[in-house]
Length: 218
Image (cartoon, rainbow, N blue to C red; front, top):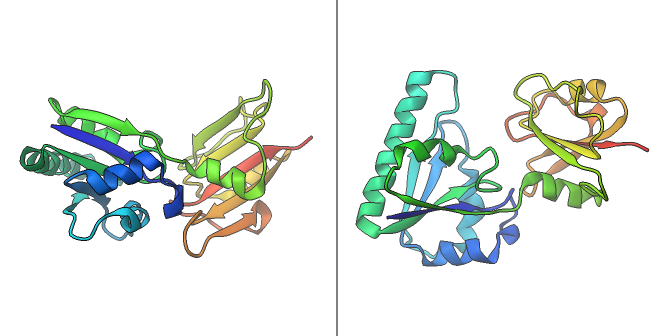
């Protein structure tokens, strides 16, 4: 049994890799994450590349703080994957962005012993964000950093990077205050319908899909 973790990119269906598009066409079965109250974005991105009639199986996803519910969702998702692969031999799990960057299916791997897992890289949101502004991620000996914004993001140790990207940025204005030597933007629904790019001082509270990009000035 083989499971492909297919990175479908940040939002624009044209940003899928050729390999991802081929697998969407050829694999006999596709899984996608479904969380109550949230649109299944990975499926929305991939749908233009999926042949009509392809079996699509939703998998439960719980990202809250209740460990019992989280464990139950992961076990149920893993069981559905095993059942699907037992019938079809192989299948693909649709992953928003890259297949291994803040990717929920990685949490299922401990429950999938005996299943061969293949990761298929995808374009990440910070790559698309940099392209929107034509600002480099890094140059020469510089580096760039990617962090999660679900908690406080402190500048210690991050000031030297050419660019810094904060996924799931809950408080864009707090990031502007924390990094005064950086020019920053908030990227909302990047690559999707309704995309907005706002200078940090104009951005209100972010949500789970808000990405903040900060570039060191000078």
